Image (cartoon, rainbow, N blue to C red):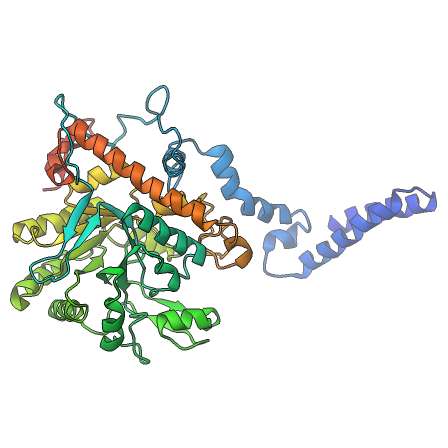
Length: 493
């Protein structure tokens, strides 16, 4: 068929040339490249569609390429977009720009949808405490407690994010009086612009490692005394890919990345799935004690996505046996985001935030440890209600990554893993990064933080609660499959 059509077109063009038609040269300029492309399609062996349908088969791949944009702008409704629907994205944009945030004509949600949550309000609203938005981190062994905001920036590494994105986040944290988690990629100069820092150490110990990949106490001690570093977080696992290590190809290990992470230029960098410094719960507690001592007594905790319950019980037992306990635990849900994760890990590994958070909180309460160990919750939290729901399940503070990214200008193009982020957030392409204006975006980060906490305050008042610590599981209802509704206290027992 391809050769028949090509022959017919060829005859037409030759005839036009013969009769001196002025369109003939232009048709030839179009036909010849398409004919060559068709020949190439017929001999290539990678794509059956192109091989069977030369030239026109390319339209299938063109449509595939623009499918996400068509889906987002023309197909999805305000409430069914994924991973974050349009209503929630718009709310973050409006809060970051301090625009009108009200909604006309009532809710667009199906209030009888199975799994829908809502808060119990009171007919006697109260005045919320002036300092509802702060909480102190630091257990009995901590010498430098930290007064943290109830909402902070979740772990995102430099390299995964551009220098402009990291800079805007840190400046926004400085403007708003909250903290930025560095992610496991080490501390860059863009993290040190005046905002508070939570230094995350992953299995690669980037920024505090020896040449063989093991932890370096001397380097850690020096850096952990920097005044902007307020807390240390030891990452055991993350919700988007729990139990999965990683590798940074040597081609991406530039001079700058090598300096920040403490690795060799141009060589592959391995992040093992587990920590080489310990292999059991006692080892974890001893390492936490070492980090606290080296840092001069700053709050030290660990981050995990809940997996096997027995392993967490073992950690509790190790706290009793060693007399060492973390100052905080960060619970990450399996719905947590990341730049790139294997599909099986992103979809099918780890416990969602509500289940994991309830389990950790209840376990600490039963062991009488909750009074000394703060809980940070992270996992797709964007709105004031999202925060209230996590407070009800035991969280003391909430970390947000995608909320902060949307405030930076993320349009959910879903190209985080491609280095082609169109708004300059998850790319290191200089031309794309230049589009992210740091002063403007830092103000939007601070605005989003401020307006979200204001929404939390308004909800607390409506619930008759003077602070987040007063919110309990009986204050949140959820629709059940049989149409009834139950409180979180009934569900998470």
